[in-house]
Length: 342
Image 1 (cartoon, rainbow, N blue to C red):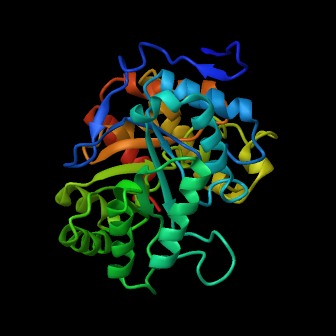
Image 2: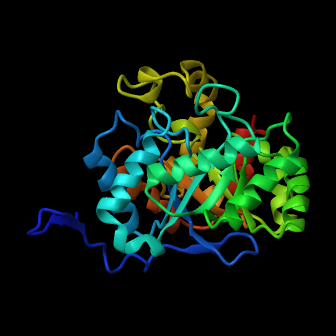
């Protein structure tokens, strides 16, 4: 990995000169911003329980292969705030000369600090959270600032006004909305358009097994309104890999931490996973590569967010960029196996 320590004892990093040669970049909706087809998410593996050396190697591996987008949120960890703090140290130590080659995004919406002002969608919370995020990241601005989740108890005009203030203050270049459905995203777009705010992207959960965005109007809305879509959990917390084909490994996430994926989830989807793996094998792909490619074939999808606990997992994800096109029969078979999604 191209990192070293110079004679002054300061760490340096020299990225690969070929980093832009193989990664495709896609325009986020009708905006001028392009994102890599694969982006790096900082959700699970950049908290205080992770190795700093592993975290920095993940960032080096990503950037060396054209992954220019690092996605965070105020509450990512564990503990909340620690992913931004660790990312900020990595950016300061190694990426100072490359800030303008990176897209850094963060979010606010979920619970972050005690009391009535530490979550949801109020102007007070969102703008205070953005200031805290910038401090932890050591940045003057983020490229994209998201409202992380809808808040039905705060007027949409107030939440969108806070996003507008984030841009006019110079603390965010663009804004995004995460976990909104189509109807609420359309209403938010009308407000943001009136305020001349560069709202360019939605971030939602979407994968072969979870088709919620196809049913709640979100996929149609981003297409109609000219917004990008970046998808999280593209591998459904690891279900759409070969990890659970033969049961639950002792070192798996299910065995160690059942908060986001349970034994019941594995049992419920096992037959579908085995069938999907058969299709992937016939295509000459791993199940994970096929799952990512299935999303990237869609014109609405700007980028897919992947997480990784070690650099090789990130390299494996890049295989999704080189697979064959899907045939109509393959797509129909995938739909039959997955059903309508959750």
